[in-house]
Every structure is written in C-alpha cells, then in structure tokens.
Length: 77
Length: 383
Image 1 (cartoon, rainbow over the protein chains, first blue to last red):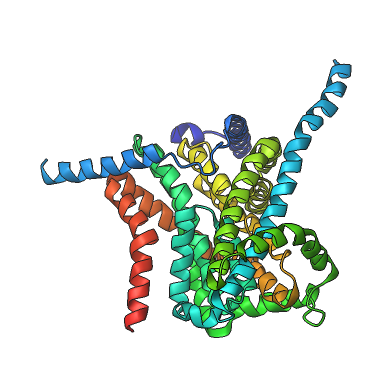
Image 2 (cartoon, one colour; image 1 turned 180 degrees about the vertical axis):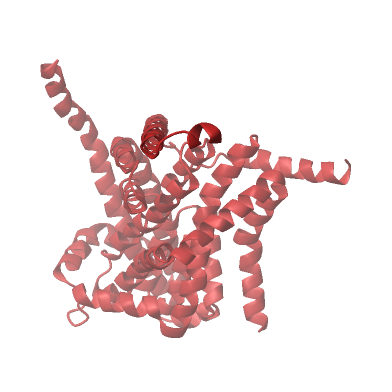
C-alpha cells in the first residue's frame, strides 16, 4: 500500500483523500439518519404508564431476590 | 378523505372536553387543598410552627425529611405542594428550603427502581442504571453545592424573596390575581375548614392537614392520569422535535414534557428503557433529566397562587426556591464543563460496577435513600 501510494502524484493522493473523506461523511450521515429513525420509532412505541408511577414492584422484588442469590453464590461457589 | 378528517377534529375535541374539565376541577382541588393545609397547620401549631419544627432547624434534618417523604410518596409535586401549604401555615422558609432540596433527591428513586427491571440483561442494565443514576448524581451534586451556600448566605431564599417582591406585594398583602385565586377557592376551602372545625382545637388543625394532604395526593395523581391521556401526543411530539438537536433543546423538552404530564417521575422513568435498549445514549438522556427537574417546579408555583393574605409572600417564596434551585443547578453544573461531566462519570462508573455485581446497585439505593439520610441526622445531632 505504502509503495503504491509513493508512486502516486500529490494531486492523485489529494483526490483519494477527498473521496475518502466524502465517503466517511456520507457513512456518518447515513448512520446518524438510521439512529435518529430508530429514536423516532422508539418514541412512537413509548407507552406512558397508566399508573401513577412507572415502577413495577414485582421487578423490584425480583431484583432484590437476584441480589440475595448472587450473594449466596459468592459465599458458596 | 379531507371531509372525514375535517369531521374528526371537532369530534375528537368534543370527546376530550370532559377530561379537560376534569383537569381544571382537579387543579382547583389542588390549590384549595394547599390553602386548607395552611390553615390546618396554623391551627394545629397554634401559631408556634417555628418552635414545633425546632428539630428541623438543623438543615440536614430538613433535607432528610424531604428525601424520605418524597421517596415514600413517590411524588415531588405532592411533597413540594405540602411544603408550600406548611409555609402558608407559618413554617419558616429557612426550615423549608432544605426540605425542598431533599424532595429533589427523593424523586429520583422512582427512575432508579424502574432501571432495576432491566437486570436480566447485563448490558441493558448497565445502560438503564446509568441513565437513572445520572439523575441521582446530578441532584446530589446540586445539594453539595447549594446547601452550604444556602446555610451560609441564604442564596436561594434571598433570591426568591427578591423575585417574589416583584409581583407579590407585602404592603397590600396580595396582588389582585392572587386575591382572585383566593376568592375562587374560597367556597371549597370554606366547606373543608368548616367541616374540620367541628373537631376540638388541635384535632381540627390535624384533620385539615390530613384532608389537604389526601386531596393534594389524589388531585396530582388524577391530573397526571388525565394529562397522560390528553397530552401523550403532544409529549411525544416534543420528544420527536428534540431528536438530533443539542443539549439545550433536550433540557427545554424535558421541562416541557414534565409540565404537560405534570410528573417528573413519569418523564424520567420513560427515559430509562430508551437508554436501556441503547436507542438513546446517556449524553442524550442527561439534559432531558435536568429539564424534568425544572418542569416539575411549576406545580408548587401553581399551588402557591392559592395562598393569600400575609402568608402569600413566603408561600410564593418557597415555591420559587424550588424553581430557582433547579434552574441554578442546571446553570452551574451543566454550564461549567468541569462539573458537567461529573454526574456522567459517576453514573457510568457505578453502572459498570452494578452490572458486574448487583450488590452495588442495591447498596447505592439503600445508601442514598436510607443510610445516608440516617447518617446525616446522626452526625449532625452528635456534633
């Protein structure tokens, strides 16, 4: 690659660089567009909780049970 | 098709009229309830609120009251409206300021608990827990900065007092708009106070406080429920518009969404799953959380408009303290680059540890919302 590059003129190198930079910018734009599309989709799918708070107490209970399980496993591996 | 959509508009708004009427009615109940608490507090304390709350002159005790009360009720709006009512009933603003600060921390428990639901997937839990605790870290840092400034210089109390002086006159005891609110709430307040007055002395005051608290809690709960139905489209529209924009738009939309659904817990809890799935980065979620802090302060301001007479000024002052605290915190912590990243760093580090060992997450929750408050009281009582 280095040998190939050393055989090129300065103008040729600048053209390659410009083209690469333009492609990178295009890829970045495409990625940004996809991320933003995903974000719009996620907001559309968002469900506002019908209850006063969004806390699911069964999940909180499951979490603390998992903490106790993890602690037991560490004591008796 | 055009004809059908034209027909749809009035039909949709017609069907929502009763719900909007419900919101207005509940706001009426909310501001009346604040007034009832004020009277109840005055009656129950016999005008000796300062002496009765002598134990809370220690600002750390006030802070802990705010943290624990909000964590238990899971509604900072309810707690701050209650505090406004207590100030209207004679609780000194200086004692109430740390309580208001504490309610800011207490409210973050909700989204932290929501993040625990993501524990089944390690990466998802790391992202969700970081999104939740960045709010914890920010609010704790705000207290570390502003509580000493309040204790030493009365920064928030004095600024709020100066702002209040601009539009609530001390001389004629209230401005015309506030008098209008008091006149408007007069009938309901009169009925509630009259009913409670059947009880002897202090019991009448306690009954008014309990009735006021229950009404505040119920009205805020149902305002939230109705607004979620009525404003879900608007809230999503605001969030859509913030995508791809900078952090200032994030703060603004966080405040706006919180204002339209009247619940910071709802808006911050909605952000947690969005971060958990990786759809939004922590840096994108962070400004939105800060906006939620500001948006939630409007409820207490609304509640304060019901207070008339000599106590209109301190009631509005404490409501403004809540707003100024959150606005100043955003200006200072988010405005200064070296402080801005501290909550992000703290949240990322804690979430990385918690995703490896869940005990770190449990320890954080128990420490911030239980052990730290108890420790603060113990240390400040002993020394």
